[in-house]
Amino acid sequence: MTVAVIEASMTKFGDRDAWIRELLAEAGEKCLAESGVEPDEVEHLYVSNMASGEFEGQGGIMNALAHDLGLMPAYSERVDQTSSSGGAGIYEAWQSVASGASDMTLLVGGEKMTHKTTAEATDIIASITHPAEYKHGITLPSFAGMTARHYLERFDVPREALAKVAVKNHANGVDNPHAQFRKEIDVETALNSPMVADPLRLYDFCGITDGSAAMLFTTEERAKEIADDYAVVSGIDGATDTHVVHERDDPTVMGGVVDSSDGAFEMAGLEPDDIDVAELHDMFTILEFLQMEGCGFAEQGEAWKQVEEGRTEMDGELPINTSGGLKSKGHPLGASGVAQGYEIYKQLVGEAGSRQVAADTALACNVGGFGNCVITTIMEAR
Amino acid sequence: MSFDAHVCENGHASYPGHTLCPDCGAKQTETIDLADLTGEVVTWTHSTKTPPGVRAPNTLAIVEFDVTDVVAELAPDAADPDTFVRAIGQVTTDDVETGDAVEPVYVEQLRDPEVGIKEPASQEWDGYRFDPV
Picture 1 (cartoon, rainbow over the protein chains, first blue to last red):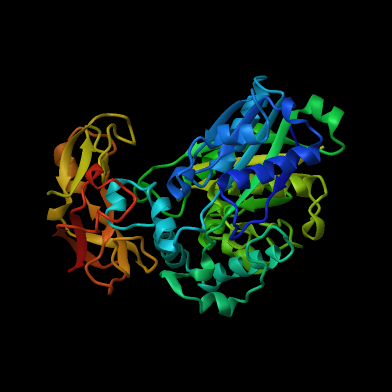
Picture 2 (cartoon, rainbow over the protein chains, first blue to last red):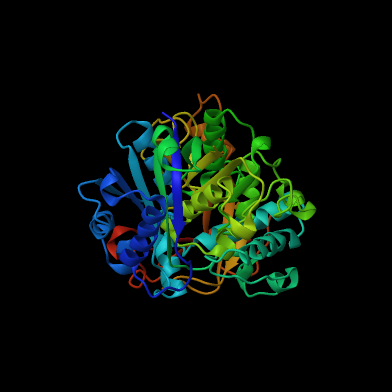
């Protein structure tokens, strides 16, 4: 059964006063209202969230959201796959409709983070590491620093190449009213920003963010009846790599990206060259290169050349992160994969406003941990 | 404590150990104490934004140990034995470069277990730092 996305919404990302229940309800209510679908039509509700208990002490948020939106007795479930919880939610929502278990599935992803200090938030996120890693004080940014150094040294890549990813994504984010940081930066600013995990500096990292995003899924048959424009999920797959990051054969290859994108392309019957626009999980600038290579958009060690040549800019052959990416838009953990889905949906139905590019086929790659769990989704316009 | 990499009958080595070998699914039945070996730095970082209870800066490295000979002894019939195993950890100094030779040195407490998010009793907090030779 072909699964369609008929609406998507997101809240303003940033430093919000709202707590997790309010954030989730804001995106969920907006998605339903803009679709015209009534709450009692929703049969399944998935809530993507990594750590509402750790951040806020609020558990059971799928039940809370179902009640706040009046979705009872819809089946509800919280989806946690760390930073890829949102992508995993897309996979669950797709499965619920494709299997026939649900005719109308609402997905809402969200996270409330900014009330914690940077050190506390970093520790909550680092809790996903193996005890042999955690006891050394290893953080996700430190994985990024070690991987970036290896990539730059092994493939003889100029340090400026990473800064150019940040410059591109910040420029894109200026046009995104939902983005946390709507500010252009230049290469010098990025290269002179404070060191976080040598060789990576502040502008190589996304922020700590509050926010929520939602998508509404149904069968293509119903989509034709109730939506003027919609997109279909033509390919989707998830994959898991090692928990212990240093055990991977090649530190510059994210196996979960390779395997999940292979699966998504095979399901869709498409090749990387068929993709018109992509959202990649640039939690750290180096990840944009690793995902471009893992998804087949570039050869190993060469993605940076496409950034240098402008191929991935808004007016390039393959615009990447038209939303501003996690870098500019922000990264409320459980929301990010859904917000990627929001962006490619809006691009496909022609509602991306000043960020609009010509696109019939779009890809989103959502990475959990440091490539530990990955979901790749391909959507096509109808 | 020792600094054990774990080896299955097919000669696959991993640090840390796992319930079943990540490569082939066999039980990991042998160990190699990496504390006895000299390794080489594959990559490193100075982590400055560290979590509660962690030193700052926290210089970290991924280190590769050549285990060709010891795996050949432990799993003599293995068809495709591992030749190296990697580990990750703190470095004793902030002055480290890729390719440096390092030796593991024991440290009783790598971070303060009382101030992080993990339950202190849930894991060990001692271990090995890498010291450039």
